[in-house]
Image 1 (cartoon, helix red, strand yellow):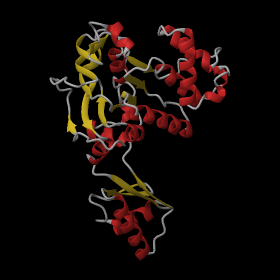
Image 2: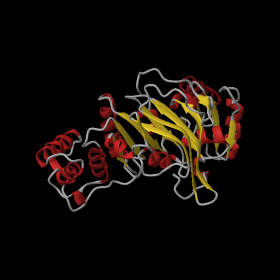
Image 3: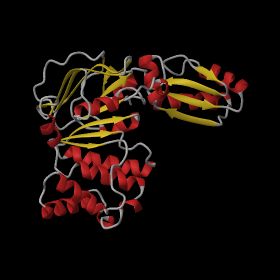
Image 4: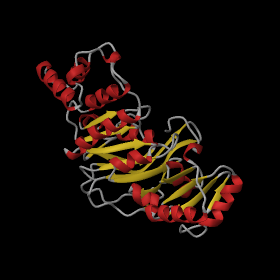
Length: 341
């Protein structure tokens, strides 16, 4: 994660943003309703400084994509204000579109065209002369590790290669502000890591990025700050570490052969963590604000009692853990609504 100074976590109910100085992306009290009662956004406010990454974290149906669609001129809000790259989204949407790049949830590439042809086409659509568009396409293919397959049809690309090509297309016009809507959904772990490395390189080059994701790990690695969205509202802001610390850290899970053994282990491990040790079927959970020291204590106590665990692991808080802590429901229990994600 970036070494830049991070804001402290704060509970949030989409407070009104008044200081817009130096903001590359600003959303102020955005409201969007679909139909008569499907409120996708309920007063969302966000602020992103130039050259930083904001991770918009939330489950499906939380309103993340609706925010992105408004900021990228694809939707009009019912009320509120949006400013991107210093340009009011409603007053001059064409100028906003010239200042941004957007990669949506699904790779928007033409399978018939080659990688180079896809990027050249985007360059021409951005009014680059053909010669410049071709040069820019080759530059991006090299930057994104696709030079060797640039003359192959995109239909032969793997999922990770298609996502990299899609991201390259969003950068043809060298936009200062980039929006990525769940860019790694559906990718295998290796492809996800490769795309993360590409995104990190872009940010080092000064690009401002708004990233939506369901993955706390992804936000933890890429984002300078995080806004947690649930049911159309910003409910908390901070870094991934700060969000996880709201829960008091991770937990040690000790898996035994059966519930009887687990209850015995729970007695032995009572007081090992900072909170209450609990038992769920054959698994004992020990709160671990300081994971490594608590793990050592757990191992010592198990050895002293002659108990052998079937499984032992230190678990960091998951997205569901964070959401349960912040909202009282898990990440998979949002209420999907038309236009919301």
